[in-house]
Length: 181
Image 1 (cartoon, helix red, strand yellow):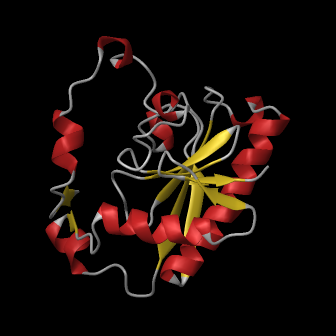
Image 2 (cartoon, rainbow, N blue to C red):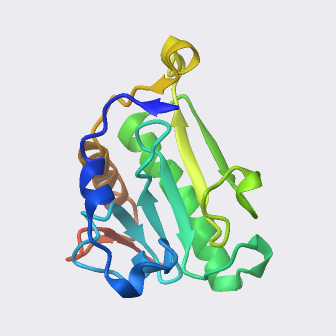
């Protein structure tokens, strides 16, 4: 499926990767908080997991919840990683409801090799996709193109505010929101 308009992607596509990151798991590169969290689209964090705005969203607000543990097997997550993974899933849904008032959600994990539907099979992650009545139209079916109706930066700003307003949340210098354990 083609994407109709995504000018913000050029910076990601053309960025120069440091040699040490070339073969590294893309999710592992975001584990440590960084002053670039906002530009990397990391919107919320706990000690053992974080929330990332998807660079290839199906809909505005498409989030990924990612544990720090590098594993492709959900059952390999230890207690703290599993707890943070679930807590950030609930918190993400709350933030999406607050920011965008969707009619529903699709959530799920693509576990295993690419045949499971995902492109990153060696690091567990959960997709949370807000859905609205009428959010699909003829474009994906006839035109093979998904139209995104909001820029990633605007989506990030709305979610940042929604996460920051939650109980036990604190904004941090890295640009993201720290969620209390």
